[in-house]
Length: 77
Image 1 (cartoon, one colour):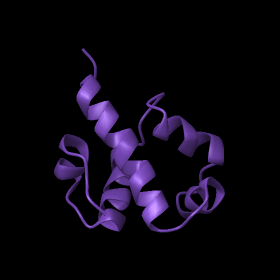
Image 2 (cartoon, one colour):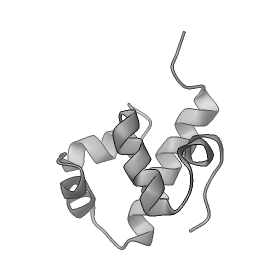
Image 3 (tube, one colour):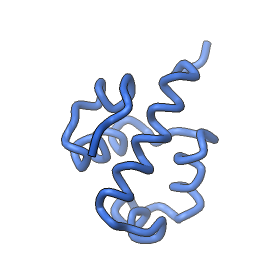
């Protein structure tokens, strides 16, 4: 059984990109916040994989929403 549904995966990917863009950060800048590479962020934004929960909590906090909202709904920034 998959950890996230297709809808949740899409929400996570879109919300990561929306959060990054709302901060005015490049892939590289956003990646530095999490000790990741720009390829990792790109993979998150293209639904290839998702960040681990502690990282997703940090991204949701940057977006100003709960992690539940971050996973289940498209955010407005």
